[in-house]
Length: 124
Image (tube, rainbow, N blue to C red):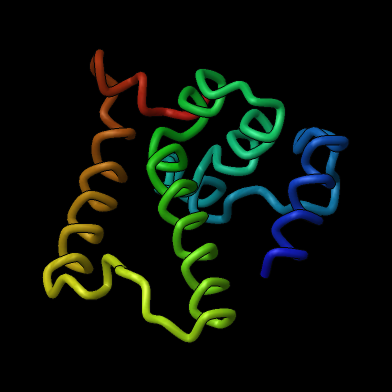
Protein backbone atom coordinates (compact mmCIF):
# COMPACT_ATOMS: atom_id res chain seq x y z
CA UNK A 1 0.00 0.00 0.00
CA UNK A 2 2.81 2.40 0.84
CA UNK A 3 4.61 1.67 -2.43
CA UNK A 4 1.37 2.01 -4.41
CA UNK A 5 0.56 5.32 -2.70
CA UNK A 6 4.04 6.64 -3.45
CA UNK A 7 3.83 5.53 -7.09
CA UNK A 8 0.45 7.22 -7.56
CA UNK A 9 1.77 10.39 -5.92
CA UNK A 10 4.79 10.51 -8.22
CA UNK A 11 2.61 9.85 -11.28
CA UNK A 12 0.22 12.64 -10.27
CA UNK A 13 3.09 15.01 -9.56
CA UNK A 14 4.45 14.75 -13.09
CA UNK A 15 1.17 14.24 -14.99
CA UNK A 16 -1.73 16.66 -14.61
CA UNK A 17 -5.05 14.79 -14.76
CA UNK A 18 -6.16 16.83 -17.78
CA UNK A 19 -3.27 15.33 -19.79
CA UNK A 20 -4.14 11.72 -18.93
CA UNK A 21 -6.26 10.58 -21.87
CA UNK A 22 -6.67 7.04 -20.47
CA UNK A 23 -8.45 8.29 -17.31
CA UNK A 24 -12.20 8.12 -17.98
CA UNK A 25 -14.53 10.98 -17.13
CA UNK A 26 -16.94 10.51 -14.23
CA UNK A 27 -19.76 8.30 -15.58
CA UNK A 28 -22.30 9.81 -13.15
CA UNK A 29 -21.48 13.34 -14.32
CA UNK A 30 -21.47 12.26 -17.97
CA UNK A 31 -24.97 10.78 -17.69
CA UNK A 32 -26.66 13.24 -15.31
CA UNK A 33 -24.63 16.46 -15.52
CA UNK A 34 -24.45 16.41 -11.71
CA UNK A 35 -21.35 16.07 -9.55
CA UNK A 36 -20.79 12.91 -7.52
CA UNK A 37 -18.91 13.03 -4.18
CA UNK A 38 -15.70 12.05 -5.97
CA UNK A 39 -15.80 14.55 -8.83
CA UNK A 40 -12.64 16.65 -8.79
CA UNK A 41 -10.69 14.22 -6.59
CA UNK A 42 -8.00 13.41 -9.14
CA UNK A 43 -7.41 17.11 -9.84
CA UNK A 44 -7.43 17.68 -6.07
CA UNK A 45 -4.81 14.98 -5.50
CA UNK A 46 -2.69 16.58 -8.21
CA UNK A 47 -2.96 19.87 -6.32
CA UNK A 48 -2.08 18.17 -3.02
CA UNK A 49 1.10 16.55 -4.31
CA UNK A 50 2.12 20.05 -5.40
CA UNK A 51 1.30 21.20 -1.82
CA UNK A 52 -1.51 23.47 -3.04
CA UNK A 53 -4.09 22.82 -0.32
CA UNK A 54 -6.37 25.68 -1.41
CA UNK A 55 -6.37 24.35 -4.97
CA UNK A 56 -7.30 20.91 -3.65
CA UNK A 57 -10.09 22.46 -1.57
CA UNK A 58 -11.51 24.08 -4.71
CA UNK A 59 -11.49 20.71 -6.48
CA UNK A 60 -13.07 18.59 -3.74
CA UNK A 61 -13.37 19.65 -0.12
CA UNK A 62 -14.14 16.08 1.03
CA UNK A 63 -10.74 15.05 -0.31
CA UNK A 64 -9.05 17.32 2.24
CA UNK A 65 -11.00 15.54 4.98
CA UNK A 66 -10.45 12.04 3.59
CA UNK A 67 -6.70 12.16 2.83
CA UNK A 68 -5.51 12.61 6.44
CA UNK A 69 -7.90 9.88 7.58
CA UNK A 70 -6.66 7.53 4.85
CA UNK A 71 -3.03 8.34 5.66
CA UNK A 72 -3.71 7.61 9.34
CA UNK A 73 -5.36 4.33 8.36
CA UNK A 74 -2.37 3.39 6.20
CA UNK A 75 0.11 4.31 8.94
CA UNK A 76 -1.84 2.42 11.61
CA UNK A 77 -2.03 -0.65 9.36
CA UNK A 78 1.75 -0.53 8.88
CA UNK A 79 2.29 -0.08 12.65
CA UNK A 80 -0.02 -2.99 13.47
CA UNK A 81 1.74 -5.27 10.99
CA UNK A 82 5.16 -4.28 12.36
CA UNK A 83 4.43 -4.18 16.12
CA UNK A 84 1.38 -6.42 16.37
CA UNK A 85 -0.37 -3.87 18.61
CA UNK A 86 -3.82 -2.67 17.68
CA UNK A 87 -4.11 1.06 16.87
CA UNK A 88 -7.17 3.22 17.54
CA UNK A 89 -9.49 3.42 14.56
CA UNK A 90 -12.70 5.23 13.67
CA UNK A 91 -14.17 1.84 12.83
CA UNK A 92 -14.09 1.10 16.57
CA UNK A 93 -16.81 3.72 17.04
CA UNK A 94 -20.19 2.09 16.26
CA UNK A 95 -21.78 5.10 14.55
CA UNK A 96 -18.79 6.15 12.44
CA UNK A 97 -20.06 4.46 9.27
CA UNK A 98 -23.46 6.14 9.53
CA UNK A 99 -21.90 9.55 10.12
CA UNK A 100 -19.53 9.15 7.17
CA UNK A 101 -22.44 8.07 4.94
CA UNK A 102 -24.57 11.04 6.06
CA UNK A 103 -21.74 13.52 5.45
CA UNK A 104 -21.05 12.06 2.00
CA UNK A 105 -24.73 12.21 1.05
CA UNK A 106 -25.01 15.82 2.28
CA UNK A 107 -21.89 16.74 0.31
CA UNK A 108 -23.27 15.01 -2.78
CA UNK A 109 -26.54 16.93 -2.64
CA UNK A 110 -25.16 20.32 -1.58
CA UNK A 111 -22.42 20.48 -4.22
CA UNK A 112 -25.14 20.28 -6.87
CA UNK A 113 -27.19 23.20 -5.46
CA UNK A 114 -26.71 26.21 -7.73
CA UNK A 115 -26.95 28.78 -4.94
CA UNK A 116 -24.04 30.52 -3.22
CA UNK A 117 -22.30 29.33 -0.95
CA UNK A 118 -23.03 25.77 -2.14
CA UNK A 119 -21.54 26.57 -5.55
CA UNK A 120 -18.17 26.65 -3.78
CA UNK A 121 -18.48 22.88 -3.28
CA UNK A 122 -18.62 22.21 -7.04
CA UNK A 123 -15.25 21.20 -8.54
CA UNK A 124 -13.31 23.98 -10.25
